[in-house]
Image (tube, rainbow, N blue to C red):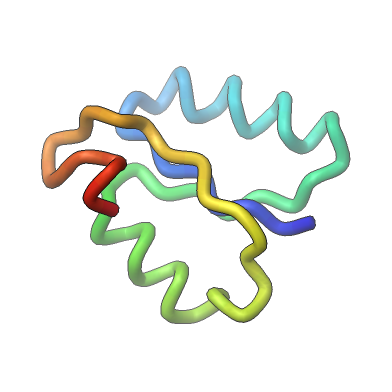
Length: 64
């Protein structure tokens, strides 16, 4: 299963990415909601789940 991970804190994003990879997931990662949208535009047909931070500089995870 391929996931899109969105987290603005690089250290948290790297730990989450490593954990998800260890569980066998393929992970696309983004630091901002706009970056996440770009990734989704390119790979959305293969992304099964979005995991996002709730509070980010550009917009909330809920809005994303």
